[in-house]
Length: 178
Image (cartoon, rainbow, N blue to C red; front, side, top):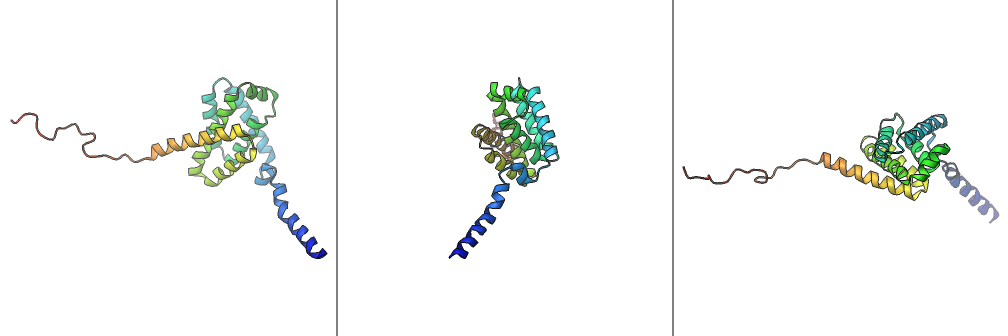
């Protein structure tokens, strides 16, 4: 019985080892820490630059992630800055203006929607990182951004259907019997 218990403990420890290392998203994804730190600094600069314009900040975050050569690391940088910025000034800006954090989350969500078409694997990883953040404000904003962008993309892709008579103003019979 003692050998069976020991084997079960060892098997359990081996099964949980990946979960221990997955606790840090950067470790789980094999992110280059120097690249991530540089991207976090760039995202913090965007927060400062667009502190007074949440609409522009939302668009800037979407463009930053979608235009990145490494959208997963860019998205991780956005999540890190929005949930735990390193710069005290950025932390203060986000604390004083919750709409700024929400706009960043919507921009991240919009980027996830676009990546869902162009790079589904990256989109899935980013969505998992958002969930792993445990930040309900960020999660709600990302969901809103994803839904809004998806609806926009679907509207753009929807085929135009012509229905006979729906746009034709020509009468069926002539106006005068000439």
